[in-house]
Image (cartoon, rainbow, N blue to C red; front, side):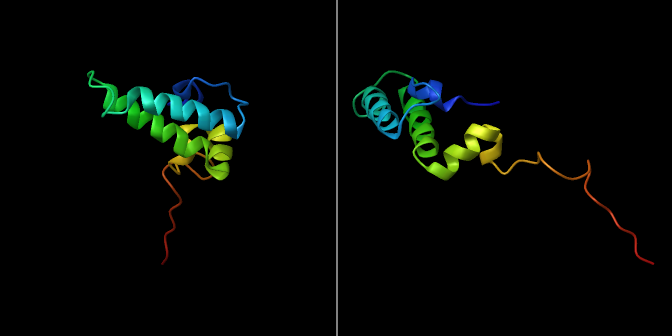
Length: 90
């Protein structure tokens, strides 16, 4: 499924908008590169920001909840034939 944005923010899947915002602020302060100089903190901060970007946007959140991270990438899942459709015109 890819990244679990709810887990990244440390919240339950049914979290309210307010809970998402509070969790983001807490995690962003904890891992902000200006506050945390430990290795990996900048990468974690970016992951937290990405999770918040998705979960704070109703449309992105709906897609993520239905299809996971792959749904947000406009992946190749869904309809169609493997290898695409090919026509020969004569």
